[in-house]
Length: 239
Image 1 (cartoon, rainbow, N blue to C red):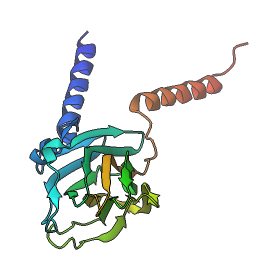
Image 2 (cartoon, rainbow, N blue to C red):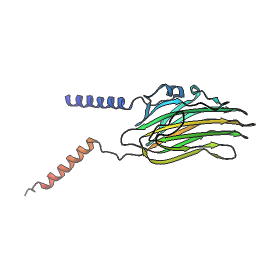
Image 3 (cartoon, rainbow, N blue to C red):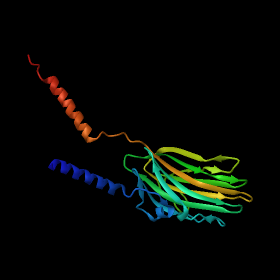
């Protein structure tokens, strides 16, 4: 009984330490909620996202999209961490709506970012309207919020929809890095005689999959099995 109690207590300590190490899990909320997380940020799996902030200034005449109206939904796969930013807004002729924000992402030791994607979802434009997403990445360094200069390796993805032409999904591969600073600029331009609408934008991170390390218990069982097998072979046969 004492052994079982000690094992349970040890497991509880490990779970507590893991929760403390990885911080608060990212959960659905508004972009304002994510900005309020500050430097502490939140986690999806072993990836920490922090320092969500509005960037600027915007161009004269642009109308900012309120971060309190942008819903943020985090989700993940075996090696992916994704955010869905639901804008659900539209610009009429003569209007330009913009959302410009940045944030940082870092992985746990042993992991590393190797792939990124940005995608427009539910865009619609007529006839000279446009929807664009300029996604600036700074691989291994910080983006300067004023000049957008990169302290690491810069990369840019630009999904767009201009009606007659579109590329709604863009992606890039790169050598593994454990830190990325990212600036996202979403613009809905109604043009002179048109309109532009957007439902959401997806921002994705992919980490390399580490080689799995066997758990201690299976290792111990394997060792016992091998030892038993060796002892059985070494034991002299009875007449």
